[in-house]
Length: 354
Length: 111
Ligand code: SF4
Ligand code: SF4
Image (tube, protein in one colour):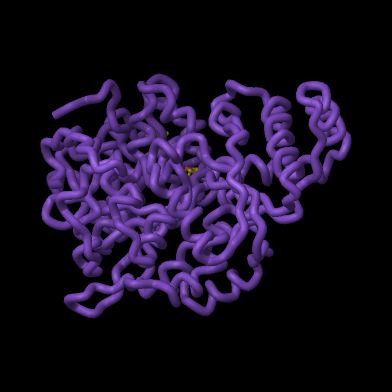
């Protein structure tokens, strides 16, 4: 799509993002998938002088179970109501989920209640009976990538590195991938809408990189809950990611940037799976295409230690990106835990170069 | 090679940039009306061969446009050249002549 067209679309899809005082709702899976990301988000916001409450009593939103037909929607709504109650008890009004599935769940619940106040009333009663809690609905609901998008220029001003190849001086070529539940269900709830979301593109451009448009840009990563959870169905999940890799590889991206818990995980791990099953790799010199979460990328441009960001837990090594930008890091610290103890080495893949 | 307990499904996407349109161009030159097909399926509904075999002129028309020659070869084997499909086509396409030219094209290009 031509740039002017995108700008018009982006103008139609702008959302309000709260300035400060956030209630943070962690993801149930991200802390296992990419454990450094949420910590980096908290650190970035602290350094920006923002007030954020990370409530230890917060639980899963049940999103994965709901989309896998394991948990009924009434239960999901009551769990969501409890989260809103925790926010209300903390005296906050701006709800910030870290997960895209959760963001989709909260949006869906709020939209449903807007159309059916009687359902909201019923859930209020359910919550009161079950927990003795009451709640107010959030005044502002923004995904944590919306928050980073909002402060992208402040981050750029404080940044130590830019997304530029230090040898050639050219911007790094970035593939951005948005989680389906960010704006495909409710396009007006995402920055830039569903077709040409701006949320990650805005970050990449503010930090000096170049976004690649490629045919399968909006294709799902294949997480898709059911096809991933049932082992025999995982081939469908891999097929989705594979379709994306094949479509993006000719454009030679330096990295993939994502804003969902599932997407970076699957786009990263499935590269290993495809290489083991079919002997195909998509990056330079038989390597893969490194995949980042937006917090990891923000942390990287801000000059945080890559190993504090948890980048050693990626299947596709991130060092090629660090080296292109010129990020300083200690190779020998890669597998050291925060306490300095050696974490051991993962097994090497048979095909994918690491 | 590992399997992990599942296989990677093959994509059914048709890449029009990669598709081999040689046969389509050959047939369209001989019988340009192929471009008028609206894939309504009337031809298939009347086809006697389709009654007993897995064959459909509508599919043949699609495979030809999409460059899926392997599927085409399988599909046209059962045609008896009776011409019933030509009689019913609402677009007046000489479907019989198209199948005839597909066969000739396949022979010529040794697909
Ligand atoms: S009847 Fe004619 S227009 Fe309809 S599918 Fe067959 S060839 Fe095409
Ligand atoms: S000419 Fe072939 S395709 Fe057409 S009706 Fe007869 S058998 Fe079917």
